[in-house]
Length: 237
Ligand code: ADP
Ligand code: UDP
Image 1 (cartoon, protein in one colour):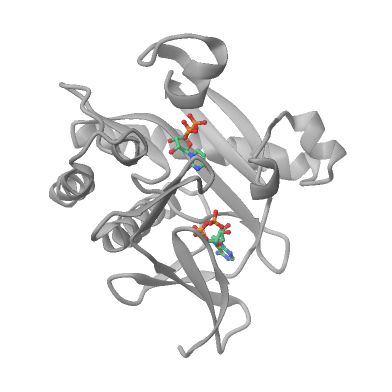
Image 2 (cartoon, protein in one colour):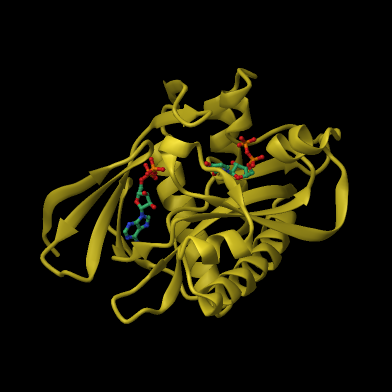
């Protein structure tokens, strides 16, 4: 496997071409942003944790029958993944009220839902990732009806798997964001990452925040929180 030119640099990762047109290498950075790039900083060691955590969780999803882009961890920060064309939807599943849900509907954080919710936003930085529903996504031709059905099915299945796994670690899965992509043959697979950057994770007993909200809200102990969830994951595996 040969690493070739950089294809893209995002807020948290770089993507490189390889000698295989169907594979790319993702390289996780310590850079952290919030509020669509308005707040910037770094979380020391985050890239290593997010890379390793994502790969372990992606491997679990595969075992549970959910296809993913994961191929092989190359180094502390680099992983080979199947190249996809990203479906420009951020798929958000919530088990407990928090963040923009609490703000939008004027409710407190911490309300446990009877059933998980799903929502989509249009992955478009210039527009600030606006919320949209399925008919809007279809009108904008962001995905086909079949793809949306598949994405919903996989997203809820990921929630079941992740909730159960984090529960074993004494961590409550509040909400998270997923991205899906299409392989060259059109197959939809789970892509991007699953990490404390993209999930809200609370200590099950104390409800202490163990995720990027510590950075977003200037709560301190950011590096320690990422290290703590990684430690708990490693112990549980
Ligand atoms: P952003 O673009 O939001 O700043 P990142 O810094 O995480 O995000 O950049 C990684 C980029 O790579 C994202 O745009 C993501 O959608 C994309 N990506 C994730 N997985 C794959 C994949 N398997 N193939 C191609 N692109 C991917
Ligand atoms: N999220 C994400 N990237 C985004 C927006 C949200 O990873 O661009 C994750 C976020 O970490 C949280 C969940 O999606 O776990 C729900 O986020 P919310 O809509 O509450 O938005 P936020 O409060 O982050 O603005």
